[in-house]
Image (tube, rainbow, N blue to C red; front, side):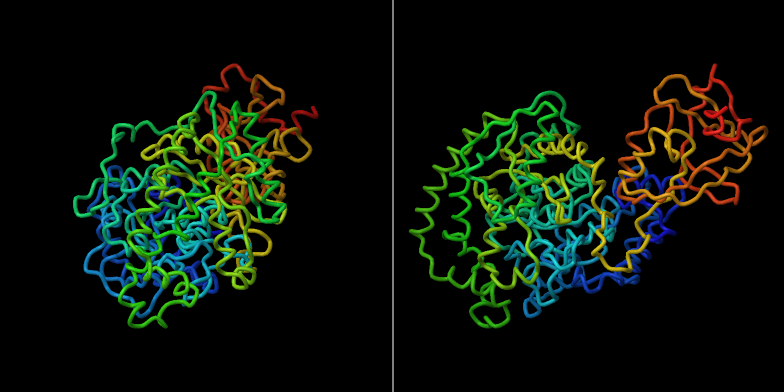
Length: 603
């Protein structure tokens, strides 16, 4: 965000700011609209809500208790095949557009919990594609490398979160649309079990398979939104009760040994992308150090099930979803979308039953393998293409993007996409965890454990922009961090700043209101800074500029009794910096008179 908006866009960070009174939802929405104007050529939005269109949502917050409404003031984006009351739904087809008189059930539940819609996000037309280029509103660009695809069909939904224009977003997933964009934009992508989230108010792609999905910055946010959105809906014929409803409260970082299924090397396919292949290997190598045992499974039945989605009779559902438009006005459809859907008209009932028989046999084989492991782990995608490459071979390369995703809903499985690495080519890479239906919380718990291993290296997703991003990004994604001890230049923990991309900004002093103590323990030796406005002194400090994406991981690694709070500097400004719990100075040596930690060490 801008330098005058130094807040993460995670739900927890915004709630802390709201509770402290340092931020209002109106300020958040104003900043989002300003930033959205800077990313117009990313083709993220089909309809960005105006200030007037958002006003009644913001006004309603005045009647809601912030402490009791878990999404109070939290901005979210909605894929434009999901209804938002009185805002057109297009499914990325102008001729199809209509204006609903009610929101989708899931959207209603989120708004009831205090969430604020930001806008309707771009998508591959009629949710037919995994790449994000199939829209009359333009190809949606990758948040990290704008010449690359964003992934689809939930393209704008993912990129809006990746660029800090929403805290979370709604997508859909029939073939991988809630996971591939998460991979390409460094996000958590939760594809819930079929029927867990109501699809009432969703323009169908394949009605019997469609899922509404969630994009978030971390698993905590994904779990919170899932808990709000999840409910049986009697008005949705495909809605299902969660048999493990009581396990909603059992989400948490999974501990202890894990057995995770992986694909044998000869069945993996990275389509010539050595950077993605190496990122996958590095991911598994890192996970092996965390007590995770990998067990190879036979991927062939999963891959065969995946082929049924587009090579089998389920294409007829896509035809039904677009009829009569495709019959009466086929030119209204994006050409490649029409090419995929039109053959569905000729499919016969016999083909459907034949495919269902085969699918049942494959599901039995796959379930036996899944029963032997805590989950299956796959690459989310085998490669990422440039927009130009995608347009050259739109059907072949889209099929390649679905190599690890297309089987999921046909086999009635749940999954979570988890970012893990930045590749040597500067693109995000991630893996997907797969489990049986209604294992959503178990998968999120494992995902949290995995995500924490890698987020210290690559940070929370939404602000990690590469040098190829627009020049307008500038220093929007930086935060000043004041250090006073072992993180100073030349001292043992300075590497914790530099490895996160932090750069030295200034040497200065605090306002004369602090006392410094040499804390027991180490190595390395550490000081503690305590506020004392009556008898404090000015302490030498350094100011470092850190990517905001790295700040959360940096703070998480700080051991007790130290923490991060607001420090007042000699010029009267405030910045985030190291503070110490007051109990820790009992018996510690006071070193305020030395003027700073380095002077004390050199005494």
